Image 1 (cartoon, rainbow, N blue to C red):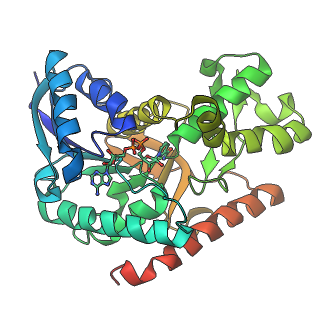
Image 2: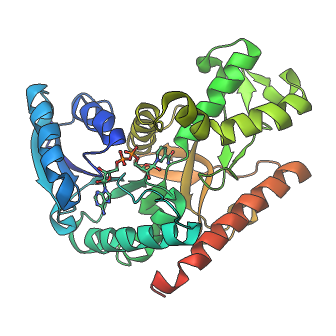
Image 3: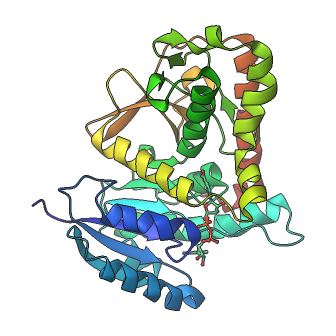
Length: 327
Ligand code: NAI
């Protein structure tokens, strides 16, 4: 058996974590031979609920669960941690403007970024799930100057998975036939699900669908899927979000399948003309515990317009919290 690794999950008593923690402990994220120590962070009023979650984790008798820490102190939660899934965030309250929401989250993610900087493993892999995920990731990253910015990522995998399913259903194929799906930009309604490089059973997706379905159905359905689930379920997507977090970390740690890529919100190096330093979703290939942006994809005028619109939104989000970002 391998030496246990430490996995921090924030918002550990919330909806997403109620699905996520059990799957991590079952070995679905890092492999069935990798023991884990779960370091769970919550706000003080939720510690009692977190205790209940820990009791259930105990009662699952997971062979890979090598230990648990429950805390309301970020410095404890991030101590020596190898993987961090930042799920806990401040939801939008009544009358709260977008700027208020950004600032409330900036406060949370700057504290957590500092705690990661001061206490986590130098090789930590960070995934931000809590919204606004890309900008929260940027804030955490900017508050952790001693950690390589490439180690901070944001989740667009749920959007990627949603897009794969929509296309498989439209073309009468299965999810296994759909490769090279791609979400560009922000995890928000400006995200751009791009099918120009996507393959279905080896054939170009754009040859199998018409432009009207692409523009008027596919793109808005993927962009608005979160809202549609809230409307149907009366609660936000939690199990599918947890699943996407597992897939994101699993592929980052263990590698993406040969001949395919995944969508990840990562630190922009200026690829495809996207402003350097933004956390923007790109096509990524993962190998040896590292990711790289797939280069050389052709961008047509339609795609460029949508990629720029979502980039602009990320610039505006960053500018709204500028005062809270260290230089
Ligand atoms: P939830 O409200 O059920 O759980 C959030 C938990 O975070 C709560 O238990 C709360 O006490 C905790 N929390 C709040 N502030 C905290 C802090 N400073 N430190 C530690 N814990 C803290 O929400 P749910 O459904 O689990 O969603 C969590 C986040 O994930 C939300 O921001 C949601 O918008 C986002 N989300 C992101 C998706 C993505 O694709 N990137 C998809 C679905 C949800």
